[in-house]
Image 1 (cartoon, chains in turn blue, brown):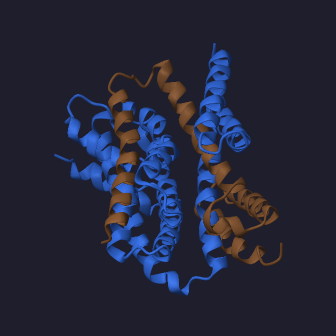
Image 2 (cartoon, chains in turn purple, green):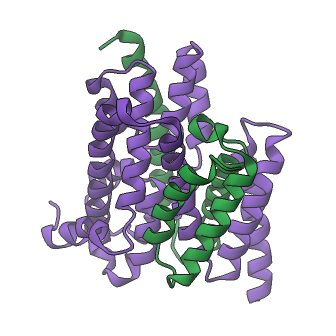
Length: 234
Length: 107
């Protein structure tokens, strides 16, 4: 089953001084408050964070419900917005694949792929032996997932006491945290260029196609960064 | 639970899980030293950067009511704190929430 030592090592990673728990928690407090405002009850709010566990997806769902969108359009919009999880999975799971580990661990634990868990794993995987990485990953994912669910509950009940300025403060926290993490990860020419070009092209492509801007911006910026990086190395 | 909300949650979770699951299926044949792995690593970082930039430039939800100037000011100040505190993630993050709440009242 799951190696407890590495599971708890991963779980405890959110207790580090530069842990994402505070930022992640605040973001889901905002989501909890938002879900209450659009008419979710507490069970639906908890259920939503447990099953979706992706901030942009939850936001798109909330907006779509507000405007009375159909289930099909919700599905397509969320799929586009969360398609970024595909390259994130492909750039993470090969680091954990080990023949001694059962497949179900990978299929279930891919649910934990989200920016914060992904960035923690990316900066820590080298310290863990390959065969134990998936258990370590499940620990990280369970921890960030628990923080998200608990924060949603807090946000749901706090929403009556949060004013507009406070919600704004909570909303900026998530992008700032991710910006700092990405700037911290800019150690190679490929990653540095990917982050800079992605940040420029994402908003530019929004003018041409709001739905596709993230994916197209990411695809063009990532490919250019890859080619420049490969050429530089060779 | 109301049926519409429940169905929306289920549809959203399936749409989200698909990308994660397909990513794992593709990973089986990809080695971490391969070129395709390095390419996907670039795609992942670039897509994240595009997402964050779009969230700030064209926000949805609460941030929509914050002015451009206040958003940019908070980002620059937070990045300054990030470097001053030797790349600690918590200080700039907490600072950003407090400063956004205050700055938006003045800009």
